[in-house]
Length: 105
Image (cartoon, rainbow, N blue to C red):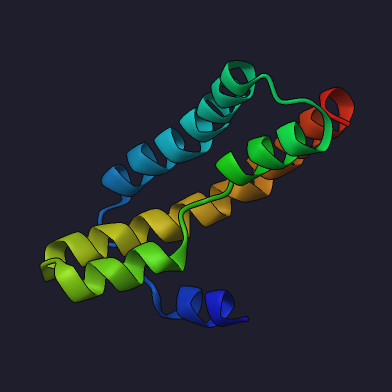
């Protein structure tokens, strides 16, 4: 619930940077998760959970940490990335769930 409230207050300031970093997050996250599954030789439930967790969008915790320790320009960029990656996750998470349930169940 707090994530939803925080997302309503965030605004997209630099759309190009936000799209670029969000694509990196939602594309490279599952790839890194899959490589970790191979490296640690995980199977079943643990492999599926790791893949799904690595596929999640950027979180509001990143925004909170940035707002405490970073200048305003970086905070705006982090907020933009959170909004865009959350919107992109509506497409990517069902795809990742399909593969996680099919191959790691």
